[in-house]
Length: 222
Image 1 (tube, rainbow, N blue to C red):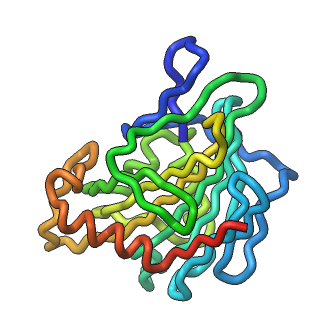
Image 2 (image 1 turned 120 degrees about the horizontal axis):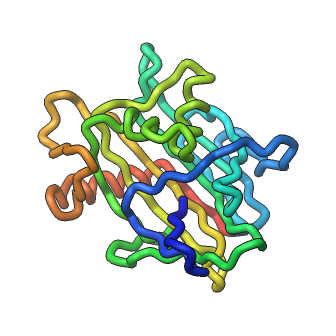
């Protein structure tokens, strides 16, 4: 998930919504999935294992604006009506050799899985599903279409933890993990258009979200 800044030769990453053109890349090899585990041989070399209540929905590879390659995987737990109640969206991404862009994130909040450091933010939204579909060319719209192929959909009121790890010193590759939950209609968690920074407005809830994100995800470096 990247943001192009004018015509400069570096891409500065931010936690603001970023929309990128997403097109499938037929024939590209995807990281294998065995049961509850994504096996990554590089960038980073690690195994990502998810709790047994999550069903593997599927994967796809995207070309983002001709600038970066993104590989998406999705695990979800859903209600009988097809609305996703909890999910993990994993995205391995790197810039093509045709540019010199890099990723950069503020390190206000960090957490570790084994030896891998992640920066993260926690936000809530009044209509997460609609937000992903706003730009039909975005990576969010692409993951929403993957859900739709399986008769599933993101929730409306939702909170999510978004985590980024940069596996190489040149900062040209990243893995993004988004853990999300549906919020009940009567939830006291604040929601507003554009998203609410829960680390500022509901820090106790934000802490519990991070704990739940960690509870059902184990990362073993290889």
